[in-house]
Image (cartoon, rainbow, N blue to C red):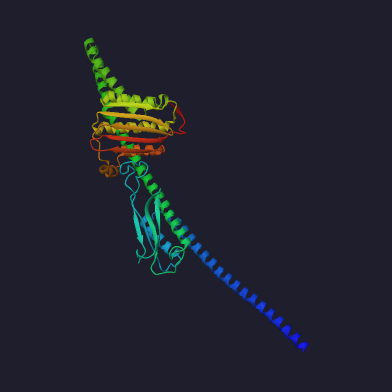
Length: 418
């Protein structure tokens, strides 16, 4: 009887051990199942990351292809985007980029740094795209301004994920695609802007050469030819009478003085004398006085806070040209009786303010014309301000004159003492 009890106890112990081992096996089985699921999730996540990286890499490669239009680029990107989402067979994309603003003069004309860009815009929709479906969207930004968007939608209902039916990683991807497209558009428009400026620079150079040639030929050369004829008239006589000499020489001297003045005016227009030696303030003051003397236009010049400010030659010559072009436009078009030019150093900025009491202009209406005709005066002033890292704004209304405001950084310009 005792032996039977021992055997039963042993059997119970063995049964308990088997149950424990079975529990361990079940735990191991569940662990292996969890590891398998985790492995599958990891593989799936890696597969999604590879698709995302391929998408961004392919977009970068597309941006380097020459001759690829913006519309073609968006179509290629749309295909890449659809293939990179979790359910590519159901994914559809829509990409839109608006045309560039026509000019950086701005609607009220406060923005002097943008514009002048190619105005091309484009849009792409995948075949069968349905805007009413659940979608992800990310804005395309150009220097902080929204110029378009990237959208991805599913044609069929999909299980809920992190953002509707979309993964958290897909949010990161669509944002990255939108950011990349914004950078591509920025680079393309900058290149187009540079090409336009290069063409305008060549045109301006040729126009200036034609002006100089005309000045030399039509005025200076003719004046010198007239002087030569007068001198020949005297020299042809073997014994010219004193009366002839006295009557001819003053006229010849006057013609010679006029020719000398023409040469000085021509040289003054090419490079204002004294700019490097006297500084910007003195040179502009003298230029404004010259406008008063030669054209009768009342120009008042003021300089505030300029004592001790050091400006390099590039800053000085570009500020001088902006004022020169402004006064030339006012004299030709504004019908103004009075102009005020102010040069102000207000740390950390150098401010140039030019105001007239002329007839003014509706800049909102004239903006398109300025862009289409590519008025080199307006373009040149704006580009000179941009070259110096600043901005130029225009304010005007019909009958209210015009105000031109230039704001430039004055720090670290170095060079010439004022």
